[in-house]
Image (cartoon, rainbow, N blue to C red; front, side, top):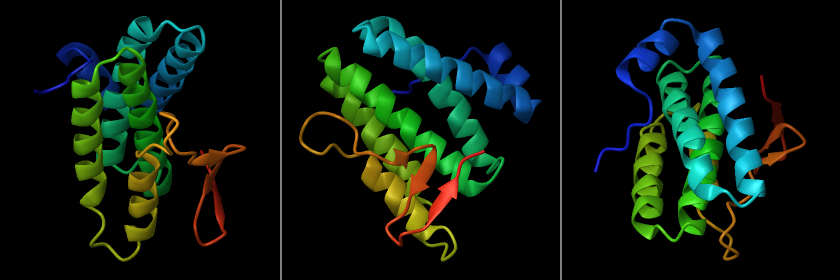
Length: 152
């Protein structure tokens, strides 16, 4: 299974400009969240999926920083996984969990990024209420070390 939400043309258009990609991520996440809050999970999935694709692109380039891109990637993956789960689609939920965890795990060997990568992976797992574990508090990344990083 290979989940792709963006067409090749939109993917290329967004890869060419990180500011444009960031704005698209913000817009699609907002729309996806709003649809989820309304209970329209099947309508939210395309928006959250496109945001997930963009978040993966920005994570690859670590733009604007690894902390921001990894946090956004895991937040987006968690939202998309929750939408699939609310729809009763465990297959896609688990596929995304494994895939997103794997992407983030690539940085576990990097001393400067391993704590954040581990925190982002942890945030992908539910707390038993079928809701993503909280990663953000008041627009800040919550770190186990007590420090908060302001998001871009």
